[in-house]
Length: 187
Image (tube, rainbow, N blue to C red; front, side, top):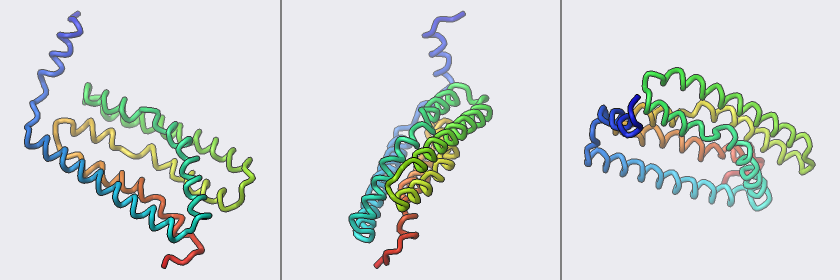
């Protein structure tokens, strides 16, 4: 049995060095993607505040704050764990993909159940209940976000921005639902 340092050395010998130009391009693309997503998020939330008014926008923000407590348990760091394990053992990627997605789906269902209890027991009005129910449905999409899988699969320096930006944008702009169902005019 080898020492831990020899095991680490044997694992890293198979990895090709990352080209500085490719690393810089990946960093630039991820930075531009993050900046663009944050700028668009700021613009969309500013527009929603103007369109919805203080009361409805407050309900939306309260709903988003409550949903944090139900969204976090769906991941529980399993994405980071999966990416690390697949990077270590690429031949286990399919098994880990199924196991982690299944576990995250089970956690999402438990989180939805807890949210359902909150919705039934709250006495804050039907608007808030409706928003919580709609955002609660989004918990079912979380287990199927596969950024962690692509991160591990393309850890050799491939361009990750193409995988991260669309999912990030969908998560950020998933809040457009209240605008679409609002009784207030958009203009």
